[in-house]
Length: 174
Image (cartoon, rainbow, N blue to C red; front, side, top):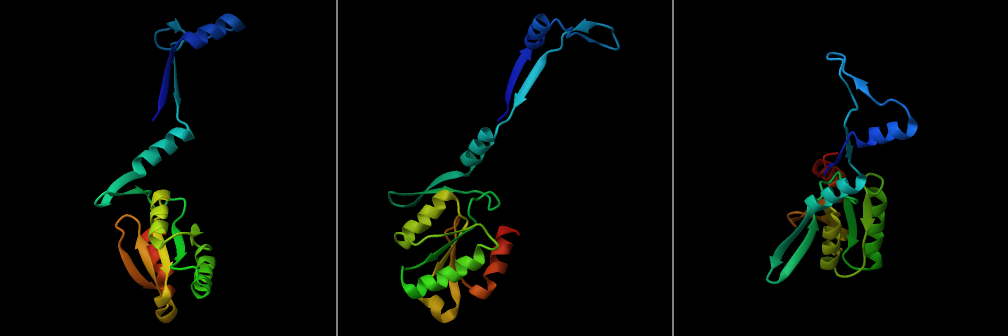
Protein backbone atom coordinates (compact mmCIF):
# COMPACT_ATOMS: atom_id res chain seq x y z
CA UNK A 1 0.00 0.00 0.00
CA UNK A 2 2.88 2.34 0.56
CA UNK A 3 4.43 4.06 -2.41
CA UNK A 4 8.12 4.41 -1.71
CA UNK A 5 10.30 6.55 -3.96
CA UNK A 6 14.02 5.98 -3.38
CA UNK A 7 15.27 9.34 -4.65
CA UNK A 8 18.91 8.70 -3.66
CA UNK A 9 20.77 12.04 -3.40
CA UNK A 10 19.38 13.34 -6.72
CA UNK A 11 16.89 15.89 -5.31
CA UNK A 12 19.28 17.42 -2.77
CA UNK A 13 22.12 17.63 -5.33
CA UNK A 14 19.79 19.43 -7.77
CA UNK A 15 18.64 21.79 -5.02
CA UNK A 16 22.26 22.48 -4.07
CA UNK A 17 23.18 23.24 -7.68
CA UNK A 18 20.25 25.61 -8.28
CA UNK A 19 20.16 27.35 -4.88
CA UNK A 20 23.86 27.41 -4.16
CA UNK A 21 23.08 26.28 -0.63
CA UNK A 22 25.26 23.53 0.82
CA UNK A 23 23.14 20.41 1.35
CA UNK A 24 25.94 18.27 2.81
CA UNK A 25 25.58 16.54 6.15
CA UNK A 26 28.51 15.92 8.45
CA UNK A 27 28.50 12.64 10.32
CA UNK A 28 29.30 13.56 13.96
CA UNK A 29 31.18 10.30 14.57
CA UNK A 30 33.35 10.02 11.43
CA UNK A 31 33.29 13.68 10.33
CA UNK A 32 32.50 12.37 6.85
CA UNK A 33 30.56 14.81 4.63
CA UNK A 34 27.91 13.57 2.25
CA UNK A 35 24.58 14.49 0.72
CA UNK A 36 21.89 12.29 2.30
CA UNK A 37 19.69 9.97 0.30
CA UNK A 38 15.99 10.74 0.38
CA UNK A 39 13.36 8.06 0.79
CA UNK A 40 9.92 9.47 0.05
CA UNK A 41 7.03 7.36 1.36
CA UNK A 42 3.50 8.19 0.32
CA UNK A 43 0.19 6.81 1.46
CA UNK A 44 -2.94 8.34 0.03
CA UNK A 45 -6.60 8.06 0.83
CA UNK A 46 -7.15 6.42 -2.55
CA UNK A 47 -4.85 3.52 -1.67
CA UNK A 48 -6.49 3.01 1.70
CA UNK A 49 -9.94 3.13 0.12
CA UNK A 50 -8.95 0.64 -2.57
CA UNK A 51 -7.50 -1.72 0.05
CA UNK A 52 -10.68 -1.46 2.11
CA UNK A 53 -12.90 -2.16 -0.93
CA UNK A 54 -10.71 -5.02 -2.14
CA UNK A 55 -10.72 -6.62 1.29
CA UNK A 56 -14.52 -6.30 1.69
CA UNK A 57 -15.61 -7.34 -1.82
CA UNK A 58 -17.06 -10.83 -2.10
CA UNK A 59 -19.09 -12.83 -4.58
CA UNK A 60 -20.85 -15.94 -3.40
CA UNK A 61 -23.09 -18.43 -5.10
CA UNK A 62 -26.41 -18.56 -3.28
CA UNK A 63 -28.21 -20.82 -5.71
CA UNK A 64 -27.70 -22.48 -9.02
CA UNK A 65 -26.53 -19.73 -11.36
CA UNK A 66 -27.26 -17.05 -8.76
CA UNK A 67 -24.33 -15.00 -7.50
CA UNK A 68 -24.63 -12.48 -4.68
CA UNK A 69 -22.22 -9.54 -4.52
CA UNK A 70 -21.48 -8.43 -0.97
CA UNK A 71 -19.28 -5.76 0.57
CA UNK A 72 -18.39 -7.33 3.90
CA UNK A 73 -17.30 -4.14 5.60
CA UNK A 74 -16.72 -4.21 9.30
CA UNK A 75 -19.82 -2.47 10.67
CA UNK A 76 -17.70 0.47 11.81
CA UNK A 77 -16.66 1.08 8.16
CA UNK A 78 -20.03 0.46 6.50
CA UNK A 79 -21.58 3.61 5.01
CA UNK A 80 -24.96 2.59 6.43
CA UNK A 81 -25.36 0.44 9.52
CA UNK A 82 -29.08 -0.14 9.13
CA UNK A 83 -31.63 -0.14 6.30
CA UNK A 84 -35.31 0.28 7.10
CA UNK A 85 -37.61 -1.43 4.60
CA UNK A 86 -41.38 -1.74 4.73
CA UNK A 87 -42.39 -5.02 3.08
CA UNK A 88 -44.84 -3.22 0.80
CA UNK A 89 -45.57 0.40 -0.07
CA UNK A 90 -48.79 0.39 1.92
CA UNK A 91 -49.73 3.38 4.04
CA UNK A 92 -50.04 1.40 7.22
CA UNK A 93 -46.60 -0.24 6.79
CA UNK A 94 -44.83 2.91 5.63
CA UNK A 95 -46.20 4.85 8.60
CA UNK A 96 -44.63 2.33 10.98
CA UNK A 97 -41.41 2.24 8.90
CA UNK A 98 -41.21 6.05 8.83
CA UNK A 99 -41.48 6.19 12.63
CA UNK A 100 -38.81 3.51 13.03
CA UNK A 101 -36.55 5.26 10.53
CA UNK A 102 -36.89 8.56 12.41
CA UNK A 103 -35.87 6.78 15.62
CA UNK A 104 -33.01 4.70 14.16
CA UNK A 105 -31.35 7.54 12.28
CA UNK A 106 -30.81 9.38 15.57
CA UNK A 107 -28.44 6.61 16.67
CA UNK A 108 -27.17 4.89 13.51
CA UNK A 109 -26.29 5.78 9.94
CA UNK A 110 -29.58 4.63 8.44
CA UNK A 111 -31.12 4.41 4.99
CA UNK A 112 -34.73 3.89 3.93
CA UNK A 113 -35.62 1.73 0.93
CA UNK A 114 -39.05 1.06 -0.60
CA UNK A 115 -38.22 0.48 -4.28
CA UNK A 116 -38.43 -2.99 -5.82
CA UNK A 117 -39.14 -6.34 -4.25
CA UNK A 118 -37.79 -7.08 -0.78
CA UNK A 119 -35.28 -9.54 -2.26
CA UNK A 120 -33.88 -6.90 -4.61
CA UNK A 121 -33.66 -4.45 -1.74
CA UNK A 122 -31.72 -6.96 0.36
CA UNK A 123 -29.31 -7.50 -2.54
CA UNK A 124 -28.88 -3.76 -3.07
CA UNK A 125 -28.03 -3.30 0.62
CA UNK A 126 -25.62 -6.28 0.47
CA UNK A 127 -23.83 -4.61 -2.45
CA UNK A 128 -23.26 -1.39 -0.54
CA UNK A 129 -22.26 -3.20 2.66
CA UNK A 130 -25.18 -2.44 4.99
CA UNK A 131 -24.82 -4.94 7.88
CA UNK A 132 -28.49 -5.02 8.97
CA UNK A 133 -31.80 -4.71 7.13
CA UNK A 134 -34.95 -4.21 9.16
CA UNK A 135 -38.19 -5.23 7.50
CA UNK A 136 -41.55 -3.99 8.67
CA UNK A 137 -44.30 -6.42 7.66
CA UNK A 138 -47.94 -7.03 8.47
CA UNK A 139 -47.00 -9.12 11.53
CA UNK A 140 -45.25 -6.01 12.91
CA UNK A 141 -48.65 -4.36 13.27
CA UNK A 142 -49.76 -7.16 15.58
CA UNK A 143 -46.64 -8.17 17.53
CA UNK A 144 -44.55 -4.93 17.48
CA UNK A 145 -41.59 -6.96 16.18
CA UNK A 146 -39.55 -6.56 12.99
CA UNK A 147 -37.49 -8.95 10.90
CA UNK A 148 -33.77 -8.20 11.16
CA UNK A 149 -31.65 -9.68 8.36
CA UNK A 150 -27.91 -9.93 8.89
CA UNK A 151 -25.87 -9.25 5.74
CA UNK A 152 -23.10 -11.84 6.04
CA UNK A 153 -25.11 -14.91 7.05
CA UNK A 154 -28.45 -13.77 5.55
CA UNK A 155 -29.96 -15.05 8.84
CA UNK A 156 -33.27 -13.45 9.76
CA UNK A 157 -34.76 -13.12 13.21
CA UNK A 158 -37.74 -11.40 14.74
CA UNK A 159 -36.86 -8.71 17.27
CA UNK A 160 -39.26 -6.61 19.30
CA UNK A 161 -39.03 -2.95 18.34
CA UNK A 162 -38.53 -2.05 22.00
CA UNK A 163 -35.41 -4.30 22.07
CA UNK A 164 -34.06 -3.28 18.68
CA UNK A 165 -31.57 -0.65 19.87
CA UNK A 166 -30.06 -3.01 22.44
CA UNK A 167 -29.80 -5.76 19.80
CA UNK A 168 -28.14 -3.46 17.25
CA UNK A 169 -25.80 -1.92 19.82
CA UNK A 170 -24.53 -5.40 20.74
CA UNK A 171 -24.16 -6.45 17.11
CA UNK A 172 -22.54 -3.21 16.03
CA UNK A 173 -20.41 -3.15 19.21
CA UNK A 174 -21.51 0.34 20.18
